[in-house]
Image (cartoon, rainbow, N blue to C red; front, side):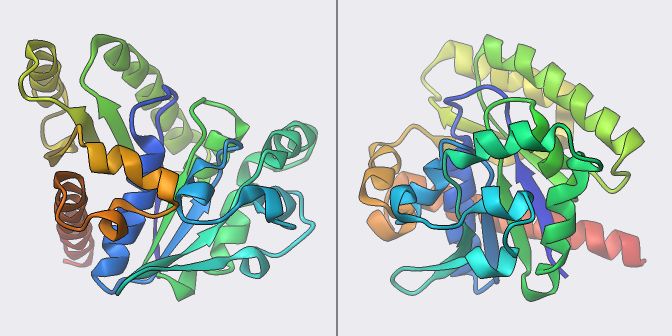
Length: 264
């Protein structure tokens, strides 16, 4: 049964979608069966995986509104030697969110549809929009854990507090399974005193919740989305590709350790 992970941060520009796409690709490269769900109306995970959002007839908007089945919209994304499945998005998600506000059980829509395909995958990743809105609440209600990509700057620290409060409230009210999987430091520049200072504060306050892997600023990582491929397909030897492979390995070890502790 799949481990469901929401990749979330209400602050934009922190590498959230980059993390969702490249983690999906890196897990796929380890022969795991992976589904990436694009829940962001900007649909950057969709285009970054090689699909043209303007040509899509059905997307996650149709699924959330009950107009189509999740299984029917899933598209395979295959690259050289690895791949993952994608449930694409489009700008219609904004309209879907507005319509869902008046619906009963609106925060559980995504969780119910994900359960219909959960047995087919090892990991389901949900790329959330950069806001604490109904779409993000749906993702957190459906998820087992949250991965928080975060740039090491002070404004990001302020936003982290709001997100952790939201995670706590959802855990206490609608999804007792939900835990904070960890904080991933992105766009990392070790030459910056500010980066090192904020990184140290994160480790001080969140301890083992901070992943040991850091994602560096990397030109290849920034270029890959414009070619519609993960960085692993664009430049397998780049620092960005190697960092996300390392992150996938660390994440797998953490998940397996938690499962062993539960089974013990």
